[in-house]
Image 1 (tube, rainbow, N blue to C red):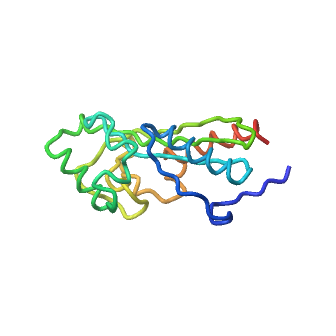
Image 2 (image 1 turned 60 degrees about the vertical axis):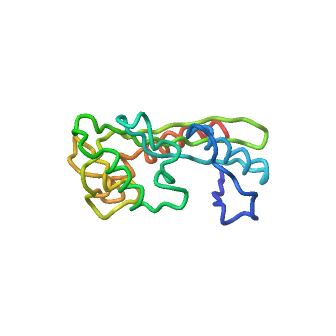
Length: 174
């Protein structure tokens, strides 16, 4: 079966999509539904972020805007470190979560989730990756996500796990 993969850059402009859901799943489905409706094509969309145990799940769906609507990765990381200042390592548990929604124009829907558990470090380490990667330590491997080569990070990350599961799920739509 021939499958053509398009990105948003390959499509006519779409209406702005406001990510105002209270969960990653809500935001992923909102994006996928709008794009499927406007393009008439099978659509996949994701939402992801960091949930810190000590902060009761924050920054969560506001991960990209944790330090403000126009916050940079540096701003978000600084705020996270401030929020966890003095918190001992055993209480700095966190999970990266990625939810991918699949929607076809006829209304069939499904979602897949991938997670990656770790601990928030006390300082940034590594130059690979983006966002919270330099703070997110995989304890059993002793490295932050920003210290892994891209191929290895993609294998162990929340997005990598979700995409691996997506391959199996897409068979139901094709």
